[in-house]
Length: 452
Image 1 (tube, rainbow, N blue to C red):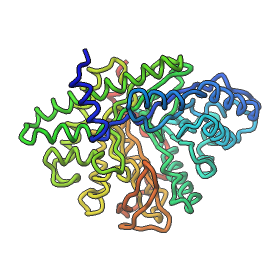
Image 2: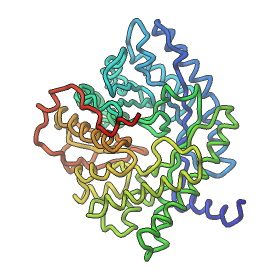
Image 3: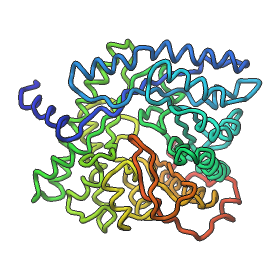
Image 4: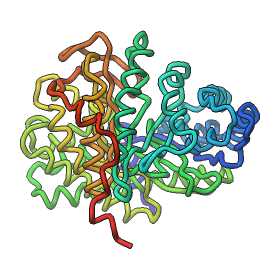
């Protein structure tokens, strides 16, 4: 039973603690749009997206107004375009990127994710063409996001794809140099990518998903921080319980919005992703949650343990609140999007190596990190390989969204705008891994992957 206290508490969370629904994401399968003629395929893609999602934005805005719940983004995810492009006689995947942008403009959504390829075990038809087109596609569009899954706990790591993605990230930064190298900010490299993730830039509609589905991403770092700050003398296990109870309440809100959007749009409800996704706003920070537990600055000894506690408690609270928690559901640590992370990186407390350690226990990986533009492609590939190894061995999703900012060096500030924020250019280990990356091949799956 909802009572007045619960209602007032939710209002306070929204008004004072930055609680919001970060995204309503409609997943749309494009498998029935496949055609050997790329122009016909593109027209089918445009027609299906604009038909299915024609009311998505308006519905989100009505729910936002009627319930008083901020819904920041309305997004679409689609079947990995490499799969659609594979059937075309003329493989010009950028045509699909332009079509997706046209559909985004028509529907009024913030982003469409799914300019993607799944190459964890090797390249199939369409994959290489799509991956090589990513820099051009992201330069020519403004609302399209791309992702490439290069590893999994079941198949190992495709090191040929890892080597290629280092080059693609460099090229994407170079061709968007006049836009603060924004291209790589819309590109994620994954290990164990989930098929139902509603968050950008890594969202795509997996081949195992329904024809169309509504997934909701909730975000409440400020709510969790405020809850912890009320109990300055709480023990660690008490803090875990506080976070769990708070996550329960936030997930319930997300489920309410998901079910309401599903009912109004006549599309099945898929999952709620309870990911604590920060913004550059003060008070809406993962770093501030960790510091409220007793850390002087994020990056100090104890940071990884505190993040592990947070991530686990969020998941436990979420799965008690809903039977359909999915996506990533935990804590994101994007540097440029988090006021506290930016501060710690600027003062030198938070390093790339510490961030890598933190990714062992959080939801994703090295996210929105600006590095010097002169960083070699092979070094970027090495960073990707390390992060993919963490995901593969630990049977979790890991990702890399890293931006080599042309013309900037360590200590400079890169500005990306909006939710992407800004961040200091961080130091990268300058010792080479070029010969290792050049070997190619595939890192075998770990022995504990054989569970059948």
